[in-house]
Image (cartoon, rainbow, N blue to C red; front, side, top):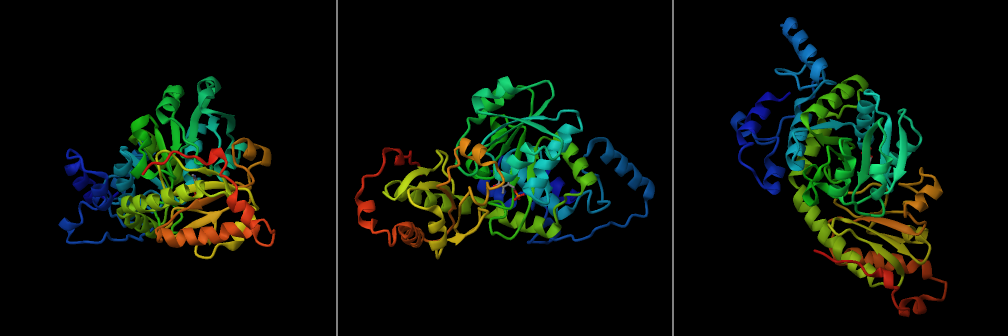
Length: 412
Ligand SMILES: *Cc1c(COP(=O)(O)O)cnc(C)c1O
């Protein structure tokens, strides 16, 4: 544990700071006092200690509660000071007591399921759509869990005595469907609600304040923000964090300290990146909604940098035609990515389940970056023309009136 960091952090806990301020200062409050500006990277896997009695006591304390050991760390799988800075910062941004980082978003979700299963609570209630691999992990029961899929209104009824978790994503991957988190949290009663907040980020939505006990991020996406870190994190109360640390220690899905450093660096620009990319995305959603080649646009009420849309033509042709926009899975980077969920991100989900969740075969999902919006639009515009090239119907397709369902609530 980075004790210096935590001490300084406690000093300022009484003075609430705005999100933009937390983004650049949380997890770094001790640096100036240490004569540092950039956070140090601690790559140690082990930590020397001449006091093995003291170390034994710290290991016992960790085994009892999963609390971060006082004093120097023991071993890299138990905790790392650089990773702890990122955890401290993310907890501040999400407004939770703690956060626990993992090697990926899927490792983070796995740890939550293992915590609950270890308490005999193997049943999960979940709302589709979820990210494809989250859906697969639950449906296949890879970790011994059993899932009941329902819509938000059916949650209370789906709960059983052995229900350990309720899982929702909002806005959901890839349809951007939104869930009323307060209502869902209420329906969960005493069962912990996990909200996957990857798409919204704490800049647009802080689920803990609306009753979620667990907030999950694929930190690979917006938190890292540059497409060069794979990571996951759970923001939660200290009690649940302790159990997650124990599972992380026992199963080994730890985050590398270099990744922790890059994530802390990514957080400092998170509010600026999310707001700028969201402005681009809202503008593109607006233009897509007015385009006769586009059948339906999905853009969430809370905003954000993700836009999904169904086209009348062949979506594979659009993927093949983009030039500035990168045809790639993943999202949340500084550059714009587009992919076809039915082929890539949600391929692993059974086709009927996928379509039932609103993921049509004509849906394209776009993660809008920080490029100039006119450059993005001109690339999209020429890519959308490709399905019609050579078909001889280009002119007619442009003069047909837009279907009524292209209307979307616009909000900036
Ligand atoms: C990518 C993603 C995940 C999985 O995260 P990884 O870091 O790839 O393991 C989970 N949830 C959502 C919403 C995602 O987009």
